[in-house]
Amino acid sequence: MGLKESLILRVAKRWISGADLESALLDARLANERGMGAVINFLGEEITDPAAADMQVEEYLRLQQGMYDRNLKGFASVKLTQFGLVADEEGAVRRLNRVADNAERLGQQLWIDMENSRVEEDTVRVYLDALKRHRTLGVALQAYMRRSEADLKTLLDAGGRVRLVKGAYRESREVVYGSRKEVAENFRMLMAMLFDRGEGFAIGTHDSRLVEEARRLADSKHVDFEFEMLKGIRNELKEELVKSGYRVSEYLPYGDRWLAYSRRRMTEHPGNVWLLLRSLV
Ligand SMILES: Cc1cc2nc3c(=O)[nH]c(=O)nc-3n(C[C@H](O)[C@H](O)[C@H](O)COP(=O)(O)OP(=O)(O)OC[C@H]3O[C@@H](n4cnc5c(N)ncnc54)[C@H](O)[C@@H]3O)c2cc1C
Image 1 (cartoon, rainbow, N blue to C red):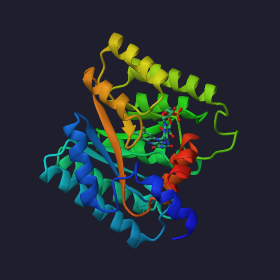
Image 2: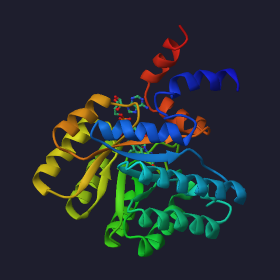
Image 3: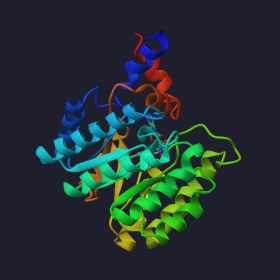
């Protein structure tokens, strides 16, 4: 491991459960004890080798069984490129169906994370198709994407479940809103659509103003939704929401492919540079 990577790892540990399944299941138990559900992601993306993609499926099946056996409240969240989407869409769909079938067998939900704009169109298409067979399957949508309003309408028309997030990938101005203000405005607009027409959706943000707005909408609309927040971020806010009676889940990534995920967490918040510097002293 290079110097830069080992420095990032020092800070990244607060966002990641650990390298193996046991550490994720332990974090899930801790989340449950704090009154939250767990959304567990086995870290991996951009996988093209079919054998490696199959191994990702096996890991998710073990994860789902582990949660079931230990009576843990929560479910898995997968990335389609870890199932080989870029190299072989048919194979990725087959792998997704195995994990989704298993979720249903065990009475669990399943979510699909949204990745970069290169695979957005494919992810939405694969999701809509899979939704016909798996009615509780959910997918993330990113408020920074200009196309998300149109996607959300399509997903709501199909009865889909959506986790609304701001978006974490570096993208060109042609496809995303450029300023934080525009992203927050679009988030508000999409969130209002969800509270109007959605069901079983998730609001995935740590932004206090957006959380406040969601609480206001929730109090007037009384729909089924939950807040979802990342491990290691805004723990006091999670606890306050739990205490106020909202459903909250904690997103827990694990595995040894932690670098790409940690880079995204590192760069989205300037305070993390200080954390990194402090870890050196
Ligand atoms: C449950 C969940 C699932 C997600 N799934 C996806 C997905 O599928 N695809 C995708 O593109 N993105 C996903 N994201 C990431 C998301 O797109 C944002 O990058 C991330 O949530 C930061 O945006 P924010 O809404 O919290 O707002 P921000 O304005 O970035 O943050 C609000 C406040 O939260 C705190 N905070 C936020 N991020 C950090 C951080 N990294 N370190 C320290 N403090 C921080 C700070 O106090 C900050 O002021 C997910 C996020 C969540 C919560």
